[in-house]
Image (cartoon, rainbow over all chains, first blue to last red; front, top):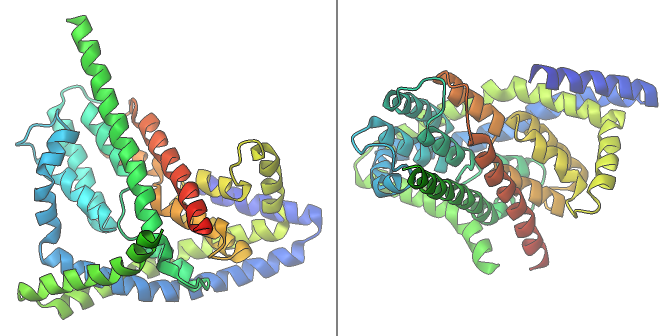
Length: 198
Length: 177
């Protein structure tokens, strides 16, 4: 991130000097900074509303309830994780929280899940199957409402900022579906290999 | 197509209704909970404000210097044969590394192409359906000191590419229907 940001500034200014657009560069730098603040004001409203609603859901125990219902799914996705392991609960909580867009609840649960998964395996320094599978699913990002994207769209004058919700759910379901397929196919392959050896 | 559009319109109001309804039926202090959450929502935005300013300034400088157009032009020629829109390639790649940098590019696309243009909608869906692969992997694996990540990257890339292609396909569907 350090080099990415630094590089953007350095390349921008040098390229601008070469093409003789330094006045535009100054203008744009100042107006972009102003714009970022305006955007944050819109964002603050949308986020306050959304996080407020989600806090109600959290306090009503809806996250734990949904995580408990995921139990059969967890057995299907992570057959190598024993039922009694706390990792299952943490992974389920992480998935539900991600699904609802509760990033601040998802990350701690996800990191706890990794810690529990590590306890299950003696060999350190190497990712277990369950760790890899869990992260692939996590990165495939199943999200219900992309609330920040909606906020950006409304700030930049979209006629219907929420119009992307439906297609976004389908797209995110496809990427997660592919992730599940990948995981399951790999399970199949490793079972075959195991049978061949024994 | 109508189903998708209806889903888009109805899902937020119904979700809000369901959550507030559940809270009320459990005799929860829904208004207090809402205010509590709203406070932390505002706090989150204030916390990301400096990041957003920094990135929007950087993207603004790149745009004003003409460098972004230069890169898009180069990519456009390279991508002509694959049919992948050149404007969307930088954002698709940057999103794998940094969510906030991708946001900077997204807002730039909104400004130059419009939020409801093909590029604007495709980028919106793309960012909603993909994750920052490298950032997430480093945080999660670093927390348990795992160095050999095996097939995680391969699986994550496959899923992300599927998400990107699905975004383009669905945007095409929305634009034509």
